[in-house]
Length: 393
Image 1 (spheres, one colour):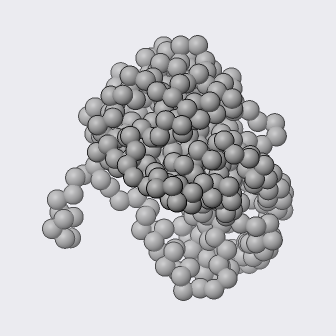
Image 2 (tube, rainbow, N blue to C red; image 1 turned 180 degrees about the vertical axis):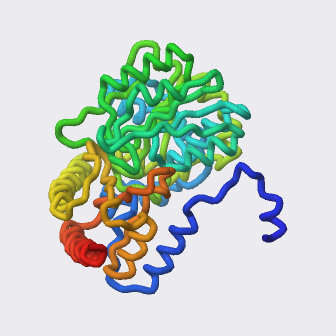
Image 3 (cartoon, rainbow, N blue to C red; image 1 turned 90 degrees about the vertical axis):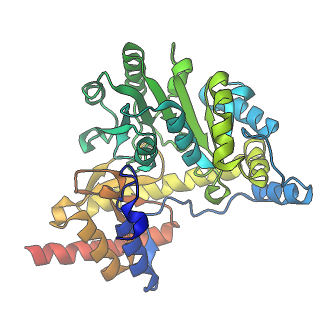
């Protein structure tokens, strides 16, 4: 162990990052790898958004902005949230951040005291765990199950609430499962929040990517919830703007005002060029986004029956662009399954253990490749599963 490692705070811990690094190293030495575990949309950022970024450079819009973002973008976000989700926010209720990840860190540093417990939808995006740990809090996973298509269950939430519980992180649609928690359950979560005086962080980064038969309900629209809810969203997923790093939080204006110094300390402001691109994303044509979502649906509609043919079970994803697949029937642990699949077929997936899942049965597959590549990956997987099923027989 190095000197620095010896002095690392115990709240900064290793996760499955080492396995991710190992998989990427294996893939780097191979050709014709099909990455089916990524969370980065394969589409280009729509042209009008890119042009807005270029114009910002030409117009000398590349200096500091206020910590919470340029006023036109904050106003456009407020209008967008009202139009799309019925959320009643004003520009002063919005803070633009360097991706939703920065919003998460800001929230935990501002609200979580040592020993506070934070309930988090699970399996989950484990950035939440790290942010809670950094603030001295205690992450408490709320498990979801395949039998429910990984939607939240009120009983599982309530039985984990203790006198130390301060916050519940609601993520719908969810990463890595694609689960959409139904509106009646969202209403029940609101009742629990009021009953137990909880803060709600509602991560809605995938809210625009919803499939037929599913409905997204923003919890801050419900009676008594706006003052105790922080709504998170951004541009990375819907607008294929992952590298532009623009997210935002919407919350009561006094909270937004009080986090100004902390937000300034973390990064001063979100990239100015990216803010102007984000403004174009909201105010410009939406047809490219509708086309991307339609393509995600077409990929999903191909992939789910293909998994059925392979004998693999999963929770049906109601949103986002992931499917969470049970591979326990192969007789392999999920890390073993993923590594062998990569080495033998060139298809790269990641185990659910990388998303805080204590059940070693699941892998996350994303449909962020063109349909012809997804079909190629499926054919490779069919051969792999048949081969190993025969060997195990």
